Image 1 (cartoon, helix red, strand yellow):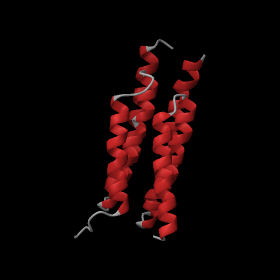
Image 2: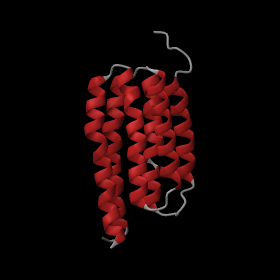
Image 3: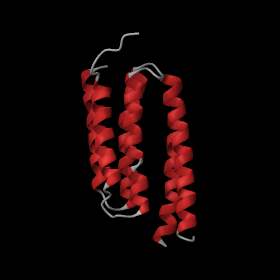
Image 4: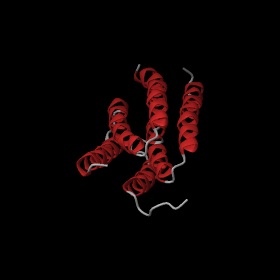
Length: 83
Length: 76
């Protein structure tokens, strides 16, 4: 299976992935909530890169599991802040 | 894909990403994130993955609901 080079979703996916990762590493108000919301951004970039390689099953699994990990992070934040 | 539709989707993704990074209020960040997600969907549909598009459209707002659970309690 040959994949054509540099489709627009590949280029924009890599851009979103890199910029989102920098935003997760250095969040502006330096707290857990901002970091968790910024963590959603590179996830969608990775989803666009998966789309470029026609990986439908990987796309579906990643979308499902990222929501699950978000729920686990939310529970951890609630436990850590005692609410 | 039509060039105009693709340019609109790319602009949606870039504007959503920039606004989600540079806004400081959590609710503003969540709204900007929804703009980014809206820009991703035309690319999924253009590849022909309609089933994945349906599943992602149903699953993606769940993470917004989970994050809103924390936002409400932090604000109090």
